[in-house]
Image (tube, rainbow over all chains, first blue to last red; front, side):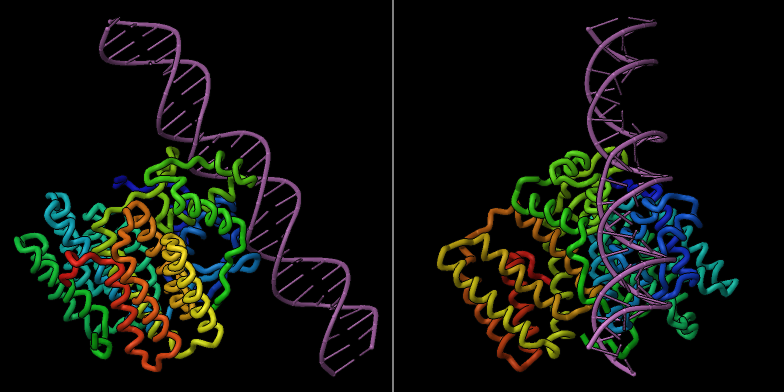
Length: 218
Length: 218
DNA sequence: AAATTAAACATTGTCGACAATTAGACAATG
DNA sequence: CATTGTCTAATTGTCGACAATGTTTAATTT
């Protein structure tokens, strides 16, 4: 199974740049994108931009109507909380179950690095960087499973979730709580011997960092 | 929210045709697809085929390596049973919860039609048509929710599942059981007043038709 | 003969040009 | 006055050609 994706091809790079525009708030939900304009801005052909757009459309970040336009997707909070996050939970715990036993030193080194940077982000009270690192952490867990199908589905889900949380004023009240949470999780992932404990900690972590108490009925 | 997808654009048509080749067994798992060949066969340009391939790649049916080739995806039974089907369960029950109350007469007519055709398929002992109708039934449930994001994720999941079951010798032993199952499910969907009952019946149905007893631990 | 290099081929990646479709402005019609 | 039809501009859809890359084959060297 091809572990190495084609992250360096032009269309992926373009998709990445458009993603950046979206996640940094340059492009807001519902805002229009024109292929030719984007092609000119980025100095590439429209064909490549089209492929990038198709990519992002299938990833759920953009939605385009034929002969009309392409716009940044609008996602409802309900969908995020009731559908996307539960699915994310499924995927990540599955990836951890399947991959944990094969984790090498490199994975643990990356974990260590993320923890290091998280502590830094905390010292500088840099919330956005911290959130970025949180995503990296979860990405690492999924990537380490080396299951291509899992990785892809996860990406499409997480992008949608991320897009939604962009337009939520992140409450820094929960920030304090997250700090300890991450320390515990990473410690278990690096040193823990029990897969079950790791999975359960991860599950708890996702639920607590994402789902308001109101929705915890299921 | 744009309920009408762009199912008629060329790339979707091409994607559909390639899908057909896959689901009818013309193209087997791991088999290679060449863009130019496909373009020639279908009488369209390579660009359009490329876009269709990208579509199917993101839907999980194809996997392509840059400058090398594109092949039909290989999916493990483990992924299907432990990841994809549980996610499918999530999605369909969610779609039913959200959409059920807004179902109009047209939806119920379509349900009736599917039931009709299922009975026919049974009389002729046409298993493959029956399976096709089963997919249509579930598709209808999801489509009726009119939630674009949900529909997309569902499609990508179901295509992968379908691809997998293609290469499983469908046991006709369970066939008998399915017949009654479907009658009950459709009856509740058409006449049932209780959403909860409908959801629970659907859940039961998916579990029973897809997951071998061995995997029912969760 | 085995290993290495180089040329030829097949396939995918990128591009600019042209066609098809849509939306909006504006006139013709009842 | 509302409606319908027609033009125009903007945008997306489709195409064939050429560039970049990977694979195979054949020649060359040891």
